[in-house]
Length: 266
Image (cartoon, rainbow, N blue to C red; front, side, top):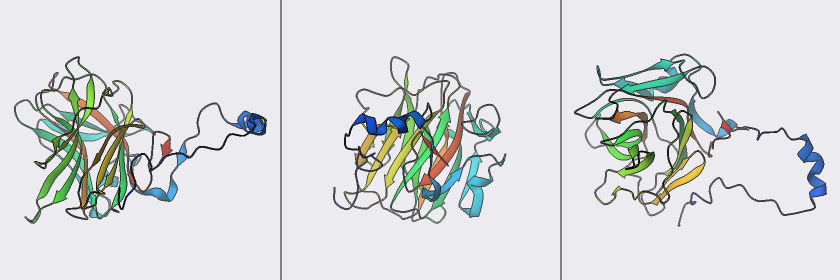
């Protein structure tokens, strides 16, 4: 692929050449029983861990915000569940007949190639009757102050009841991406990470690759690059869920130059 790296090339761990196990035995004994978490340091461009007890990380520098369609949706800092620390963001949505949303967003001239990640928690299962968008990539339009829809990462129910991630590109040449085979079920009652490589290029090196809990789910190559400004939105946008009143929690969101992965710390 000219001009860019593929998802499989990016962030891959290079394998060590095989040598005698005896050379590594003292080192293996010294390792902790579980894998250490990776501190990403300067690779993080922006993050929100919510340990300030408010939403100030999203609005910092005038480059983001929060919004909810009242009275059917709401968002608030919560101590119900947290991926790390004490706090997360609780998003509720009770829309029945029309699409409504509660969301947080960041906007910036991010690098052409960057990673966008967040952790989500569903306390129970839901049945979707329409798209349930939890991540959106948006772009500015020619109309001042108007933001255009580009690409959504949705939750969608399969006939047997499992929720999966689904990708919808609002441009008529692409629309809904085929469901992966096998489809990866979204965990219920435990935190799961959604991470996307977004290569915002206007030629065939443009790419969106999506991992769930470190497993590659989608790898799509197509032009993007309509604007250098990226509007990245985390939220709950839907209608007609069953049960109608839905709750989803979000924590440890980041924009980074390297993959965060499930092992990363912000």
